[in-house]
Length: 161
Image 1 (cartoon, rainbow, N blue to C red):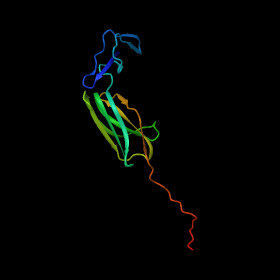
Image 2 (image 1 turned 180 degrees about the vertical axis):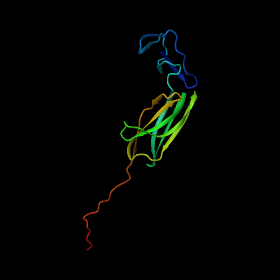
Image 3 (image 1 turned 120 degrees about the horizontal axis):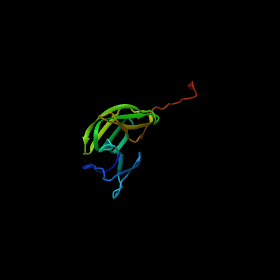
């Protein structure tokens, strides 16, 4: 395992700092650190498959939900599953968007859910590498209005006078 620091979208991950020590199996000690963020611990030279800049899910005209996201960098990114849930726990795939493989440039993505749930629903991304490893985004909550309404007329039957 090595500790690595994210430099920027143009440069990606810095090479592991020399002289790292390993006090136990779950930690890495790095000397002479002058920059504190962001860091990751990994057993490869590009510790995270994607650097997700943003992920949003927004209702449009109470008819559809637009999910859009951006990455600053990608390493062996095969595709994204856009997932939806009614309860925030049990997610189902509603679409797949191809990834950009390996890139150190900002990539923009979008998926439109044309059949969203009424009421509250939840969206997330499931990112899959070429080797089958997966990672998940944060969950986004969306509220769609229920346009159905009931009209009650009473007394029933109505009497004409």
